[in-house]
Length: 130
Image (cartoon, rainbow, N blue to C red; front, side):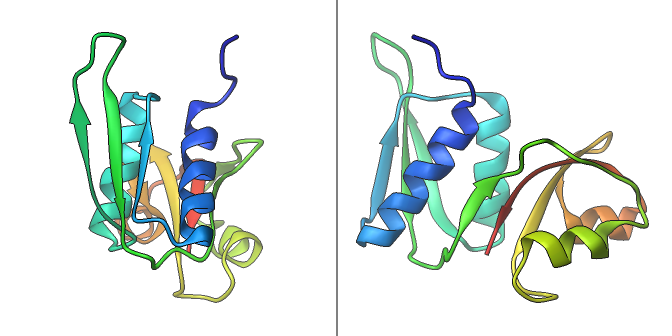
């Protein structure tokens, strides 16, 4: 049976591991979007890093946790955001202004909402983390 949203499954596994105090998550889900999301979460300090281990049945991702994530998840439906609408979605998905990060898919690549605001571009809301 195929998964409907591998990104949501991995972020849910990360959230569950954070709640139980785990130090790493191992998953078979592996995609370019997932790796870019993990790269942004590492850059923002929410994850320690991740590694890719080749296996005969497909690559395995090992994600190292820091213990700083309170909540992480995907946004469904994936809302289109104009360059002037970031405050509305910050209020909806983040607990306080300046606390947490929204991940936006733009024509400049996958960016945080702060980077997208600085560039003056809109895009599609993918996920959030705080």
